[in-house]
Amino acid sequence: MEVIYTGVHQTPEQVVETALQEDADAIGVSLLSGAHNYVFPRIAELMKEKGMDDVLLFGGGIIPEEDAERLKEHGVERVFQPGASLEEIVTYLRDAVAQKRGG
Amino acid sequence: MSSASDLLERARSGNTRSIARLLTIVENDEPDAAEVMRELYPLTGTARVVGVTGPPGGGKSTLVSRLAGAYRDRGDRVAVVAIDPSSPFTGGAILGDRIRMRERFLDQGLFIRSMASRGHSGGVARATMRVVHILDALGVGTVLVETVGVGQEEVEVVRVADTVCLVTVPGLGDDIQAIKAGVLEIADVLVVNKADRPGADEAVRDLAMMQSLGTRGGSGRQRGLEREGSQWRAPILRTSAFENTGIAELMAAIARHGEWARESGEQDRRRRDAARAEVETLLREALVKQVTDRIGPAAVDAAIARVAARELDPYAAVEGLLGA
Ligand SMILES: Nc1nc2c(ncn2[C@@H]2O[C@H](COP(=O)(O)OP(=O)(O)OP(=O)(O)O)[C@@H](O)[C@H]2O)c(=O)[nH]1
Ligand SMILES: [Mg+2]
View (tube, chains in turn yellow, red):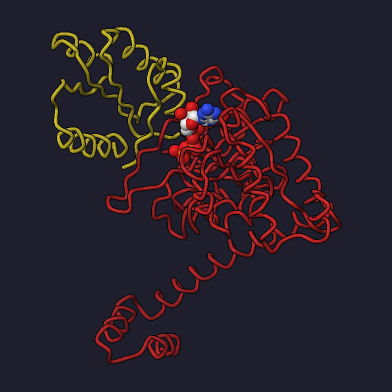
């Protein structure tokens, strides 16, 4: 697994452009700022625009349950809460990416 | 998934996603790589490839950002290929801070690609070469390749470059010896970055001394000439990627080296060496595959087992397999 770290304070446009150029299988966004209700839908929208329907979008951070549910409707396939183990995340990613690219 | 010819068509019209997919295909040597190369290779040969290497933390990425910006300002289409080491244990990699070019992030004339030096079949050097070919064919004018210069593998990687810049910093002291002689020798331009810090003069002096101990160069060296006949003596430049100083001078030195390389035949020589390495590796792989297909992998495995068990020596094993 290869992880490309974009650095902090990226705009949705920057994140999507990076994922495009790097031909990423998945985009993971960590957000603690509370801006998730804007950032995730915007990323999902840009991804759709660029035809990135086989790229997985997931996230983590301090995101209330009900927001997490709503984000799923926007194409954020999984939201990890603080304290999620690395193993859990890695296992999820392996399966979910395989499904995305295969399906 | 779309076919290679669709991808090629869209990549040629500048579609970022398709360009990125093509790069993945050749990076991983996927089955479509041969078709992609067949279509694109004839279009290669015009990009200027600049390698940037040197010890960890020397400011290579920062410098590459500055260079990329400056080449963009000149109107070139620019690509950056940033190579990071993979973990030898997991095979995974964290590809560090994508170079910091926030203000140009959405600039369609700039393409940034990270690569891990993972166990590519044939090594990262070949994968880099193929990636550079694609970018070249798609009309990128300047390709900047960044790699940490510590060992043999990295030295191999920068062989794709027409001009190699070695980036060091002040204050390395005796650690400057850590820049292995082999790395110093492949450098066409020597850069003391972080020249905003104390000790830049000493660093320049140390480099000049190491250079004079080297084997390259003719009589021009004593007279401090950059070029003399067919010889090139790497100039030593100071930059501060931080303060954005010395960048124009660095670009000028890269251009002078390029000019010398074209006139002296060095460029042709390097490109021939690179082509030879590419062809010979593919040929070797193809021959192994041909033999294996003919006699079956089991026969190869059996011979290997006998060598391991000391029943057969490796030379005899190969002779036997070829004769089978
Ligand atoms: N003072 C000073 N700091 C610099 C300069 N250039 C880079 N740096 C700093 O040096 C650190 C390393 O810079 P990078 O550009 O990441 O160095 P690098 O050689 O790419 O590092 P690796 O890829 O990890 O080997 C960063 O904190 C930079 O801000 C410079 O000209 N002057
Ligand atoms: Mg770097």
